[in-house]
Length: 190
Ligand code: IMP
Image (spheres, rainbow, N blue to C red):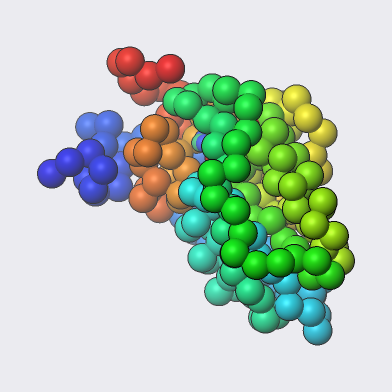
C-alpha cells in the first residue's frame, strides 16, 4: 500500500489530532447550503471550485444547495509544503465566460489571503454580475492581504490542518475530518 491510498488517518502511523469532526463539518456544510441557497434564489451561480483543496467541500456544498448552479474549476498554485511561496500562478483557468454571471468562489481555506485575492482579482476583471467567496476554513491571524469571505464554515487558529480535501504535499486529503498536522515530523518538508 502506498501513502497516497492508505486508509484515512494511518498515513502518519498514528491518528492525527482532530480539529473539526466529520459530524461538525457535515452539519456546518448543510447550514451553509441553506444560507447560500437563500442568497441565490432565482439565480444560477457559477461555483468556481478552487483546486485542489476545495474538491471535497465543494462536492458536499453543491449537494446542500437547493439553487441551481454551474460548476467550474480554477487551479492556482502558491503552496510548497507548509509555507506559501507568496506567488500565485494560474495553473488551470475556467472553461466558461462569467461576464454578467453570479460567481461563487469555493475555497478550502483562506490563510494569507493571497490565493483568494488572486482569484477575486482575476475573476472580477471579467465583469461578473456578482462575486462572493465561501471558505470552509478561515485563519484570520495569518492574513497578509485583506479578504473577507462572505461565508465561512469555521474560523481556526494558526494550525496547519489536513483532511476533508486539504493536504500536506499531496497527503491526507482523504481524512473525513480536519486534523492538525503540526505534530508531524516530515523529513525533507519545506
Ligand atoms: P493562502 O493563499 O495563503 O490564503 O492559502 C491558500 C491555499 O493554501 C489554500 O487554498 C490551501 O490549499 C493552502 N493552505 C493554507 N493553509 C493550509 C493548511 O492549514 N492546510 C492545508 N493547506 C493550506
